[in-house]
Length: 391
Ligand SMILES: Cc1ncc(COP(=O)(O)O)c(C=O)c1O
Image 1: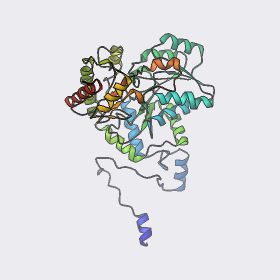
Image 2 (image 1 turned 90 degrees about the vertical axis):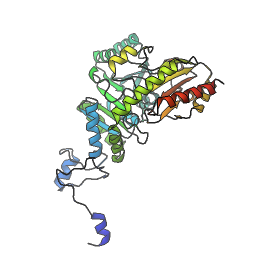
Image 3 (image 1 turned 180 degrees about the vertical axis):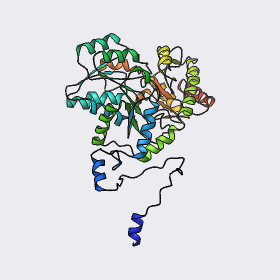
């Protein structure tokens, strides 16, 4: 064999059975060979479960999916390239022209937009309603045949807690599927409530280091398979290298999350004691209206604290700009602490009548608490409050 050919066809031996690497290899291969054309045909026809093309399935991605399904206490999982890809694939897989969706207005903005702007063009009808409006939810579900009820808890960024038992009962009572965006609550939250599907942005606490994006949907196999079929058609496949990074991040998920939640409570309590902060929203604070519900529904209180300052929008901008340890960027649950100031969070796409439910005021800021020392974070917040209030 000549050198050019040798380089292309060179293969090292696989490690013998019983001699496996402790860290799984990354199957950075688009294609998988099979022994015969018959086996290729069986794989193509989905008869053998063999890998053949990575848009359809890949062992590194599959390893992540198996773990995520287990963590969320569900039968199956499909992992995709971003959280929004998970949202979009779920909606597109489950909805047809003429279907009606009830979505809680406090839900993540781009999910609302996808329904109101994009899927509306394909004949999907959407009702937005506050998750606190139990009477309204029951009224809408009684009046309109509904395919899907979509909600989030805690919500981004207002950190409202949904009454999950109520929502699931109301939805099931009229044959609607329930989907929760569980990104804020974490990978093990809300399993025992009969929710049909769990959507996650893996970009946040699952991966945890702010260096990779991903998304996932977990639930019963039949529903997940339906979404997987759509993912294969649409193409937001998770790259194996990204899947590897997310799996690596997951190894420290519990340690990171426990520390971040502990830090968040310290910061929330500190901010609550400062008169320049008019409101601190954190589900782990006894002052939070959803405190008891959150304690019943979630294993922890999350790493996000949302605050309102007593000053003006300009002062809240100055506060964000003055922070040295909190980066003013999107996303959450990174190792670094982050802030999203009100200027970046307004729900502009919402009809004016519904904007109040998003509960984002002119000085609302969303803090994501990282793994830094809380004394340093408190010193940074103190200095930034001083700068914003001219002290
Ligand atoms: C609640 C929630 N859902 C979904 C997403 C979308 O995730 P991604 O940015 O990975 O697409 C986000 C992102 O911030 C989010 O906060």
